[in-house]
Length: 88
Image 1 (cartoon, rainbow, N blue to C red):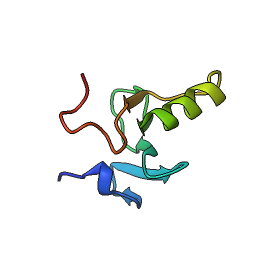
Image 2 (tube, one colour; image 1 turned 90 degrees about the vertical axis):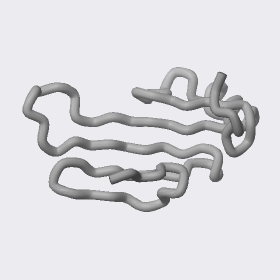
Image 3 (cartoon, rainbow, N blue to C red; image 1 turned 180 degrees about the horizontal axis):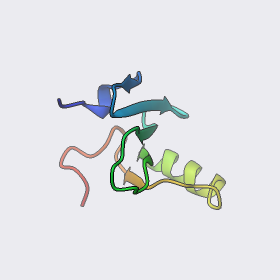
């Protein structure tokens, strides 16, 4: 099953994982929490992602929250809405 995160504004849950999305300040700043319910290997089961697009959002996030940013992965692009050709 393929899930397009950009179009996802709701949570998804099944027996194995739970995905929760949170729109932060606007459409170009989203936070996604992924929680694996069943892990056999004992590794970390909660992951936190951020998608931050546009210089304004980048400046706001990194200036205000420098000491509190706690993401496992952050996709940051200077173009509002993300860059057409992807990241560099």
